[in-house]
Picture: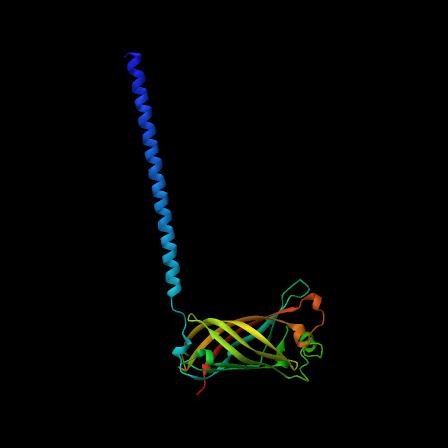
Length: 231
């Protein structure tokens, strides 16, 4: 074959190859864009589904007085101890009461009374120290109380609970973040019931407990309580 014939053939093949590569690249770009759009649409659909998933609705329960079921109720607090650990302490004796307004849950009220001397810090020596004048002064202030002043609940069962907390005769407002875990009825008694998880933070110095503040001033509150309707 003459050289003059071979050169145009090679040029044609190269041109066709280049065109094919451009077509493949365009196809890949189109596929990637389509995949990305599909992923975005899927994520949006998933978030939309999550947004409309109904949570527990406390308004489905009958109105009335609900009391803490103390075999499944915990009021605890935690603090940083010199940076070495984060102890968890709790009270063994307390009563929590919810006066539920089913038509307007935000109009409900919450009252908690804690036996200050029932604190469990993990050892008798530490318990005695916590009940002393330096800390909860249980002899002179036998109860710790919380009375709600504002209840705010979202449609998905999450919200805030604000109230006046009194420790050692000193009262300060505290706000808890509350999650409504479940509403239903007790599996044996069939009493209406619901369960909550709540957390919050306070400054212990606000309540006259200002010993060793440099070792840790913040106190984290943790509540896990199941409530059952009174007869």
